[in-house]
Image (cartoon, rainbow, N blue to C red; front, side, top):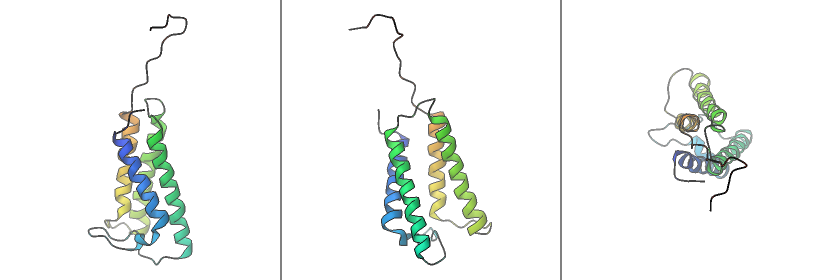
Length: 140
């Protein structure tokens, strides 16, 4: 399984995001110029619980991206899922939280990373490995 391509960089990014969500959820409420805070509300136990659960899922996505060898068969639906999730994140922040006024927030970067990862999985996957036909002689 070769490593070092874009899906591995995305995997490390998602693992890092997962760690940040689980262990440092308060960072979602701080501004990091040029980015505004992820949320304008105050940190409540309910929001903290949801942030940590999402962090676990981001970490899981990172582990999956790092260990699966994406090829032209198994990458299509996974890539589509990444693209749709990126679109959902962008739409949710733009429409619901920012009231249709673009405010630069970190989730837009995460959405862009998801879309690029999806495109990589769908259209730039690894070729399928060549297999020998059964019944033939083995090469030594």
